[in-house]
Each structure stands twice: as structure tokens, then as C-alpha cells.
Length: 193
Image 1 (cartoon, rainbow, N blue to C red):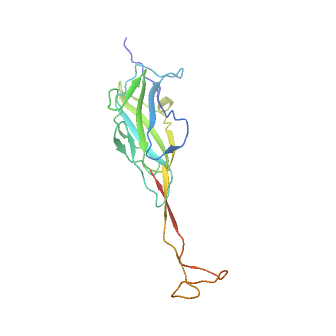
Image 2: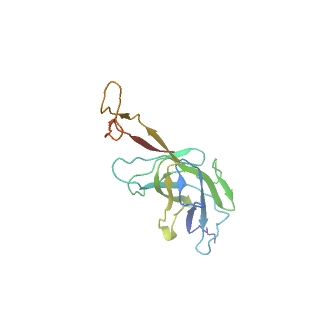
Image 3: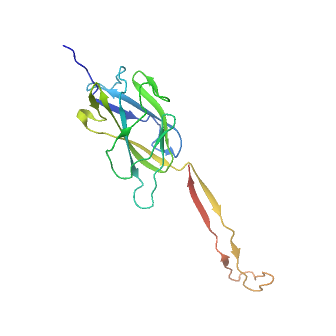
């Protein structure tokens, strides 16, 4: 009798030393198949039909925008702004460009171009005619990515102008006399990636 042994789940990890990642900065994502016993990667696993679901966890609400999530050398997708279990095709394969395999752990570089936090879920929908999900027994356990923070800030001042209070033609003002601005001081702070 022939039988096929399949992994119990797919594990997605990000081995960063910090939860904070600068927007548009590269970080590593690792994908591996795991069995029901033990916590080691199954080295013979090769992704067959890997699919991806990406959701934006924060920020939410009006006037928020999606960034681009880029992975495995330039494949780019936008996250869903509402919780979704819609999966789409991915480029994660055993021989995919920009993907390395070390003993069953598939690694690739990714980045996200905006401030916020994401959830990433993967599943292999055709591994010997079986679907392997990110959780045990067909459940879903997406990985949380980020908090993505601005890479830096720019500060742009305006050109304030003092108002004349005594002599309009000379701009003269007595010491201690109240002084105001015709154009108030303003600073514009912008988060950048």
C-alpha cells in the first residue's frame, strides 16, 4: 500500500531582532512546513501552489492608505484594509527567484512602503492534492508583520513675518512693547519612507 505523508501546517516567521521595522526597509521572511510532532522544519517539503493573504491591521479608518508589500525580488501586492481570507497566487516556490532554501526553510526579502501593521497568511493548496494551512488541522494562523514606522521625518518651516507695531515705514519697535506676527511660525512635519 502506498501513502503520502503531508505536513501538518506551514510556519511563517520573521527573525528580526525588533518588532519595529522602518517603512520600505528590507526584512527577512522564512516559510517552512512543520509536522504534528516537534518544531523542526521538514527538509523535503517543496511548495507546490502557495497562496498568500495580506491584511492591514493598522491604521484603519477614513483617510488611511495602503502601502505596497514587496517580496521575493519585486512581486508587489496591496493589503486588504478590511479583514479578509481571500488568498491570491504567490511566487513562493521551491525554485522561485529571490527565494533560498536551507534545509526546508524558504527565505526571502520583503518590505512594506507605509506606516502600519500587517497580517500575512500562507497556504499550499495542492501538495499531493492536499491543502496545507498556517494552523493545525486546516485552521489559519496568520503572522503579524511590523509595526512599520517612518524611516525618517522631514521638517519644513514657513517664513514667518513680524508685524510692525510702532513705525510702519521703519519697522521700529520699542523694547518691551507687545510684538506679534503677520505670518505665524509654522512647521510642517512629514513622515517619509
